[in-house]
Amino acid sequence: MVDRGRFAVVRGLASVALATAEGGGTEDAARLQLIQVLRAHGTADPELAREAAVAVADEVRAGEELDGPAEEPALDEAEAQRVRSALGVPSRSEQLVAALVAREWLERFAADLAR
Image (tube, rainbow, N blue to C red):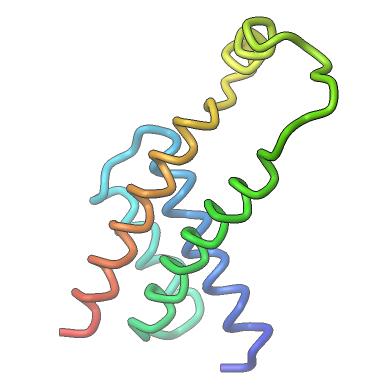
């Protein structure tokens, strides 16, 4: 698989798992979507799912680096949380939990593919 195509599949798998976890979906629902992504690309390579799990973990680490000290917050934290809730945007802690769940799902999925 061409590197650019491989990267797109990995990002697609990571995105599907993360979006499903953030939306409160189940592992079974995520697996169905992961299978659809792999089928669409004509592969069942477990390494793609492993790479997607690493990509999700890398996103978490990158997000932590971006969470450094802010100079002056535009909104106070309570107001920011109210706006996030109104827009349906998960809080940072919810995003981290979803990322950890998505990573676990992808790791199990990769292990199952490898059997």
